[in-house]
Length: 129
Image 1 (cartoon, helix red, strand yellow):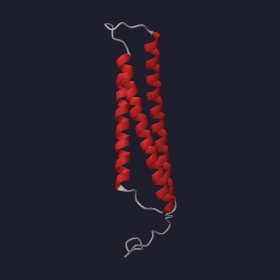
Image 2: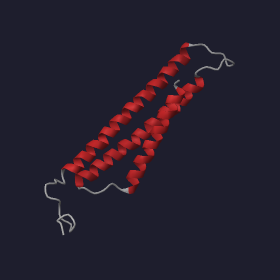
Image 3: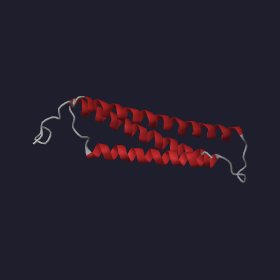
Image 4: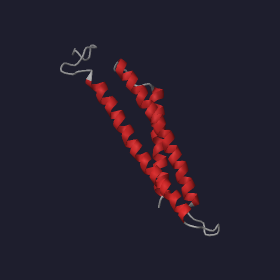
């Protein structure tokens, strides 16, 4: 039986590096999501500027509905990023204590927040055209 099969450690593997890599990966993901948030907010603010710079009669329509939709997408993206930031902080705390696997609740929260952010990004792409 090998050392890994009977509960020992694998020779040449430092168990202290894997939690650090995991923590860094969660932080990189958060940074990428913050960039996505920035683009959604920029698109929303651009549409708000267009709405206020142009006069539209009610029968013409105009960018008002798009600005509202983009505002909702921006708020959803911000909420998702706050949730993910909380998950990153919680995961970093767990990793500092040991190499325990993340809890199911933490993973479900992170996955749900990422799906919410993906929906917000998709909505902002559709509405910003």
